[in-house]
Length: 204
Image 1 (cartoon, helix red, strand yellow):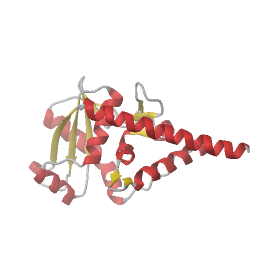
Image 2 (tube, helix red, strand yellow):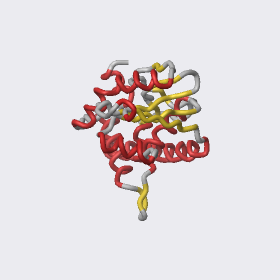
Image 3 (cartoon, helix red, strand yellow):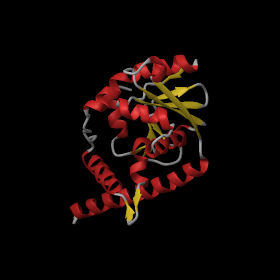
Image 4 (spheres, helix red, strand yellow):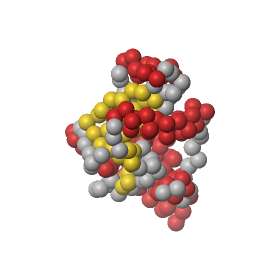
């Protein structure tokens, strides 16, 4: 799937990379990211056009470095890595929800590649922790694909060879996935309600 087809396939749909925005909460209730995301999807559905996301220099670096990260991971782990990251795979049960995993690994796995700035990569090497939003993204990808694990891969070619690659495996968490799927269904129902309300306003 080319870039434009991939963007069109995602248009108006909840994607794994944004599930953390749906589930984010503050002490007083839902975080602003949830409201912002629902507004973004309302616009996409009404216009039929994907939102034009801003690409920062750091994001562009990540995009340009991902192929090198994939190769380093495949070599280090001696695994076959397939998929382009531009294939939108729908959830088996929830319409308008899907994922675009960076890679498939063997029969049961996925890989999620991050090529962050050097300070962030060093923090990951030091503490071994994965950001909560990334954990949510990976569980959402496993929910959509049926895969049993996902390797989180952080890569920075600017460091010495032995420090360039960090890999940590995350196993499928069915309880977390069930919670996530409930929230996605609720969010999509709210989104449908807003679209219906707007359409009724137009017809009045």
